[in-house]
Image (tube, rainbow, N blue to C red; front, side):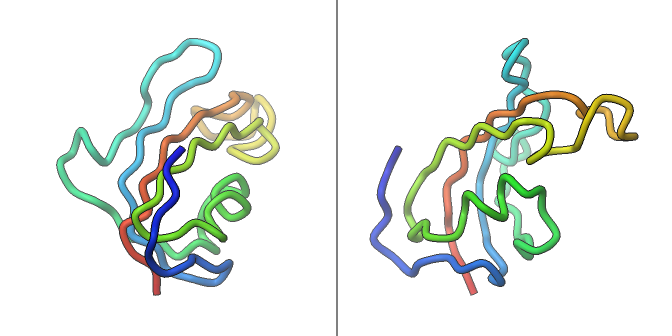
Length: 98
């Protein structure tokens, strides 16, 4: 959605982001760092596959929209997570990478 102009995120990086997650089917927001009023830092290797594949290549200052089917999110229905079996949409702002 927005191309950043800063450092480029790589697969093994720790990233600082702002994001919102929405259920594709219902449009219901299930999580948002913006709503909490603070960014969050994650090692990419600990995140769902959709983020592991979708964030590398982003530049700091950029925004991406990721649509993650269940196999790239929390797995099939009955997978033990409340969002298992759901296609999820994330808007992600990359604030930093290291």
